[in-house]
Amino acid sequence: MHHFGSTRSSVKYDHILQTPDTFVRCPLPGAVGVECIIHAAPQIGAHFTQMTAEFAAGGCLGPSPAQRFVYVLEESLAQSGFAYLPQGTAHALRASTVTRAAIIEKPYESLAGAPAPEVAVGEESAIDSSPLNGDDSLRVRSMMPDGTGYDFAVNTMTYDPGTALSMVEIHVMEHGLLMLEGGGIYRLGDNWYPVQAGDFIWMRAYCPQWFGALGKKPAKYLIYKDWRRHPLGG
Image 1 (cartoon, rainbow, N blue to C red):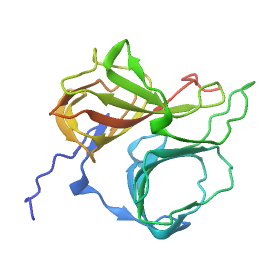
Image 2 (image 1 turned 90 degrees about the horizontal axis):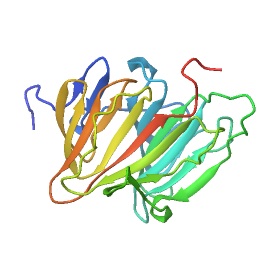
Image 3 (image 1 turned 90 degrees about the vertical axis):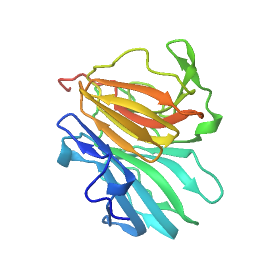
Image 4 (image 1 turned 180 degrees about the vertical axis):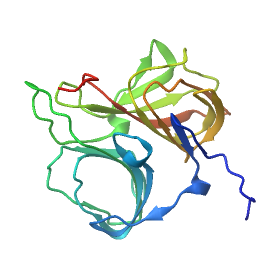
């Protein structure tokens, strides 16, 4: 159906809302039987890349020039499995069945005296959730290992209906956010957006941000942030 140029997508200096009706698929080097939707990249000012990779049965995605985090969005047998692969790890991602995965890649920022990051593989559902700021209706699961050797974090956040962040956040961390379930209202800068499962949001550092869940079922998203590094580097 043609919507005569109408879309919920929006591109601003400090944020992007990208909705599925505007997704464009493209091939990547080393990808066979895989189409990629590039959501965030250096071309918009991001310091990381986030994409959705759509694998045909038998599809293969080659190694990354950066460290890589993979979260399975949809697979015929399972979902919510994840893996972290440090920069320089020899690997290839192969799908035995039709699969969709969120992939986050970031050039590694080393830190003097910090231990080298290690491969991590797990299942989100096996991780205990923690209430955010003591609010049991807003639950966080942290999937990246914690420690000085790791320079970014990836979490899922689940909001019961009617739950909202307790404050408008303005901070130095950059975000990539993929809505997984439900929906609500997101404030980005001075703009307010209805959002729903399938939408992607990029937030530049210091972009004012707030979310409130609406509807009759929980809202859940996957969120990236840079972490544990001094803003001046080194």
